[in-house]
Every structure is written in structure tokens, then in C-alpha cells.
Image (spheres, one colour):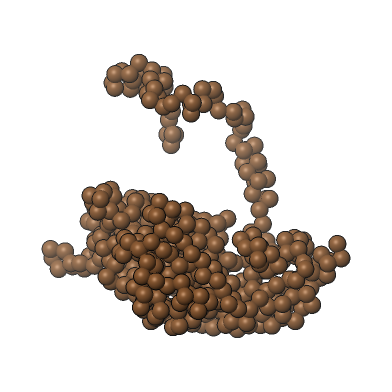
Length: 454
């Protein structure tokens, strides 16, 4: 039997008669004429399946994956090893195909995954409450902004210039309808300028947005930045790197109100940018305003341990005027990959991985700083990523020259900030060996020379 059987003309006539409509066109009478296509879609004739497969193979071959080159590309998504156990469990039908767990009696597996995931994120961030995922980090930042605005109705957001550009864009686009103004706080030697932040604070500041480590790889001094914002009555929202939290103090230790982040590095592959998940944890006082869903542990009528959806603040589930968001799904399958990955690593494994990245990043930073035509962009402590300058060089041309040698040297910072047009962001994971780093230094040195001659 076919998985898809198209409706026949007789089927259509029967359906139209059942609803009292004479034609399919009559169903679209309320659509303005100016937005109707009124012609067939311009598609080429159909092809045999084997020709379509060959065409798709040709398109796929244009992409270069992290397995086809030595990549130091990061800027939010990273090439970490994904153990085989992740795919082994994810491919099971009971976790791959289930619907939203509205009926707990038939959704215990999914609900337990959500509960265990929330526990892991709470432990990572040092915050008492986590939801059951959002889409990715930028939308999680925007959702945190909405929560902050709902909490105090103040009119200004202070956003560190070192917050991920995509997060800044998502926050600006989402908050445009709230009437909030966004002010960027400048950097001083690669980190948020504490004096500029203090000067910008006031009783109209709704929230302060930071990143830990920040977009340039530098570890922000939350101990110095958070108290001033809290004293002004503003919420502190921090986008953080889950892997880095294996070796850094969690944001909850500093009194941060909300911690969000990108879940892709936790057991999810790069996959051309998605899908992924965003994590979101907060202080308990914000529990009823958190976006997404929260699973809780309970006992059934016989006293057995069980799980239920404890809180949903989506407009579909409660009165619209009481809803705090309209997120329609949770990335539960991706979150399951994250839980499996964290369980596979374990507490000690996460620390060991963080220490390994620290060591290799320090080695890479020293190796590249020794290359003629390469300078460190800042001297701040880093964990897995650092920024360099290529003074006078066309960074995109340097990247192309490196790519021709099978090396992706990193992310061109000028794509997001003209002031960093000569900047290159270099990311290190456990996948990059010292030999790979030595290869990067050699190839980058040759590429800088080659571009300088042009």
C-alpha cells in the first residue's frame, strides 16, 4: 500500500458536496486577488526516481562537511564527537515518532526524558528550574527578554556587544513590538566594559544580556558585572556554553536570573545548521512565566513513580491573556540526544573534556600568535575559542586559501561587525589534535602571505 494516495476527482466532488461548496476555487474566495498566483507553479517536468537521486547527490556534493576538512569553525555551533549510543537510542521508534505527551499514561518515556533533561540543565547552570527546551540559543535569548519585560515592564535592554550576533538580532526583532529600546554596551579588551555598563544602568533598565564565554571567546567576569545590574533592579540574562560550564563556575553561582544556551554541541551534529535545541534555566521565582513546557515527577494512584506535564504557559493551553509565549513544540528528540551525551560523558568526563579543550586552545592560541601577520585580538582567559586579527589582510580571501588546502581556519568576524573586519574566530574541540593545530598554523601562515602578495 502506498504511504500517500492522492484524492480522485470523485473524492473531491464528494467532499465539496459534503461542505456545500461548488468548486475548490470557491474555498479561496476570501483570499485577495492580488496575492493569488492564478497560474500553475513553474516546476520542471517530473523525473524518474533514480535521476532525482543522482541530482540530489550532485547538490549534496557541493557541501563540505566537518568530516571532509580540518575545521576550526565555531561561533556557536561546534564539531564535537557524537558517540554511537546517541543514534542507537534516538532511532528507536518509541522516541523517534511519539506525539506531544498530552496523555501521561501513554507518554511516560517522553516525559521522563524531559524530566531528566531538565535536571541535567539545572545542574549545569546552577539554577533551580529548567524548561523542556526551546528551538535554539537566539530564540531562547529573545524568550528570556520577553520574560524579563513581563516581570518588570521596564523600557530598556542593555546588551553586551559580545553577545552572539544572532542572539542580538533575534532579541531586536522580537522586542520591536514591546516598545523596548536596546542599547549596546561596548567592549574593553574583548570583554564587556564594566564601567560603561555601570554608567548605562538606571531604574528603567529591564534586563542586562551577557555571554559566558562571550562571542569572542573571552570569559566574562560575572562576579564583577552581575551585582551592579541586580542593584539597579534589572534581570541578568546570560547565554552560556554548556561545555565550558564543565570548567567554569555556573551562572547560578553569581546570582544570574536566567541562563540560556545552544544545545547543538551536546550530542547533536552540525547538520548544516540544524535542527538543534535551546536550553533555558531560571530562578524559581520565574517558574510561571517560563516559555515552553516543564515536566514534573509525581506518583500514581498506586504510589508508583511517574511523570506529568507540570506547567505549560502556551496560549493553546491557558487563557490567551495569561499566556507568556506561543512556542508550539519542544525539540525533545534533540534534547534526548543531549541527555544521552551528558550521561555518556558523566560528571568527570565533562570536566576532563573541558580541561582538554583548555589545553588545546592554549596551545593553538600560542601557535597562531607566533605566525607572522597574526595578532591576538584580546588577552582575556578563554576556554574553547579565541579571536585573532590579520592586520591588512582580506580575511575571506585567507579563509578561501586555507580551504583550498583542506583547512577551515574559523569564522570571519567582519561578517557581523565592520570594526572587526580583520578578525578571525578560531574554535577548538576534542576533535582537533595538536597535529591539526600545527597544520592550521602552517596553512594560515602560507595563506596570509599569499593574500598579501595579491
